[in-house]
Length: 244
Image (cartoon, rainbow, N blue to C red; front, side, top):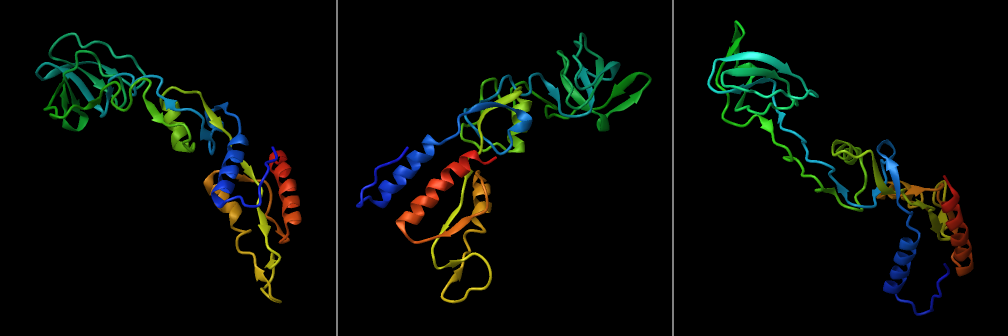
């Protein structure tokens, strides 16, 4: 939308107008599959959909045991399986890292600390708890990343681990770079009172790092007149909006 600008507009006023124009042009949020979210921006807080972990999970390979040893080995629990109840003292079940810890477990004996023979296992469990409790990493509905966070592969992995299939994000804004100044050369050696443009070649890379897609190579140099600059800006806006 055109903005009326007075001749005595302050620098702070110009920044405010530019900021408001940027807000008005902000892309609308959309639900995006996780695999397509990289390099976007979260449009809302990313919340856990469940406790993480969702169940007590073994941190080591070993034996879930109950009561004093030695223990009779009654089975094995792999990651992804539902754990049976340890119903009595003197029993153990082999357990893999990440597997659900059975209810009734009093300790986990690490494989490297265990001695197994004749269907029995013995050893001394370490004093430290060897499994993660439900919600130890995050609680259900806990904020994992705030709105406005740049989405990286790590954020995508966090969203997946917390139960999301998609995220509400804003796509990267598109930009066009205009180089202004009749004293500039865009190629070759500085000569004849002109200097090489050192900003035009680098600005697209900086904009990329700051989260914008550059529509095309830098345009310019644009002449040092209000008419030339207004014309360049008028052409640059539609070019950025329609570029892919």
